[in-house]
Image (tube, rainbow, N blue to C red; front, side, top):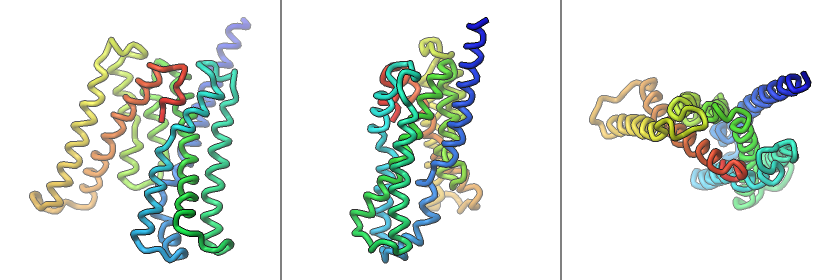
Length: 266
């Protein structure tokens, strides 16, 4: 009886963690809304387009440099036993870093502090974007460990809810549910040998080729200029292709190195 109660509590905790992770993923996509606040950043700091692009580069570097968050996750959550550590530390560090980055940028934009040099603004942007990796690491790795038989689906779900309000390129790049379902189907749960996981890469390669090839045909004028809606479909296909590679790489790495799952995720 006690064992059954513990099993039910464990199951409820897994689903609660998943629901919380989905909500967190949905609201941490500040990097994908750069086009919304970049005009005021550009005008308030008297940047030209080249300087704004330089700041944007550090946004991309920060949002993808997830090694530190991976090491931190592995350090506070040793092995498979997440209860032995304090994994909420990962979220706390991410929240603190994100607050500092965006807060100092806001202070500069509204004029509370003197206009910082461009390298300092790049540091602010890096901190703001880098905070996303801490949330992403915890959410993805914890979901994979909670549902090992559906790890592909778990990764796809986490990636698909990352900043759900974004342009078609970003929607495609983060709509990973289909890739997760394909991975789970092709690999038959944890046993990758039973399936054909390379199928995930093949589908991604074909979809990416079609998207970029059709856009190229439109750009060089080989085909008539497509309607905007159709060009959005081409862009979606091109960007969505990366979710297949991302899902396969992340899930396979986590399954191959379960004791260092946080480190290998990003």
